[in-house]
Length: 102
Image (cartoon, rainbow, N blue to C red; front, side):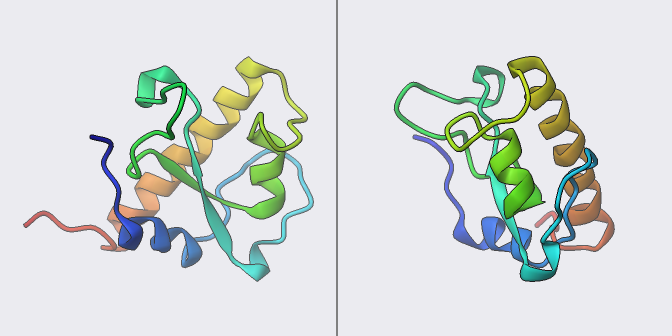
């Protein structure tokens, strides 16, 4: 069963945009959780990755890196840009105490 957690995904709406590539950032309208699209993170042919595998990015950046929307990068560059945003998201979640160990 794939891990799902709406509360975790909702944290993306509080986060800044972690996309570092040049884009028309609209983070002032809020960010969205961009799930990984790679098998390494548990992506399957008929389902998304677990909810812990997301990067907080603005909707314009999400469009640029998601292959099903209108990607502007090739596969390797999409993976690199998503990974950079994912690491930034994880740092932000832990440094701002959005996650805790019970």
